[in-house]
Length: 155
Image (cartoon, rainbow, N blue to C red):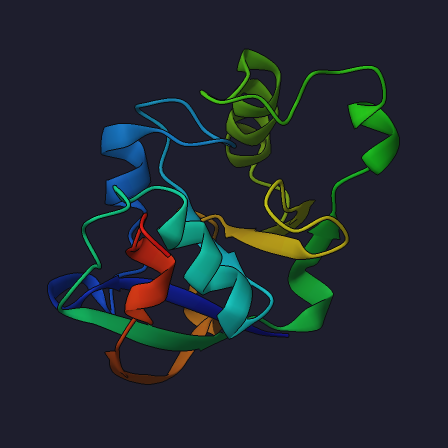
């Protein structure tokens, strides 16, 4: 599976999950390491855009293309989300606990989860402490420029 990650240049080849550990996210609490990736460049772009103030187009970002072996990916059971308020902002305790449990159990290298931003699309959470993390390959990393129209509140 090819996935994509957008981040600042100094983190473009970083699969440690330290950023998510420091700040937490939709699928993890602070203190849990995790690497967030998306199934497409477009979704990775939107995942950044929803977290940045409208007037501030991010600069110094890189698009990193990553390969995860298909047989190491676990599908999150979507039935577990039924009846849960999992799309909230800030993220719900439910999804954070689910992601923390995925890392804690350490059974799979990656977890396919639904995107909140684009219904029907998916993000892939990489477990950076899994014994098979070495099978995750960074294929490329290149400068990425955001379309400034995404960050212009006057358009």
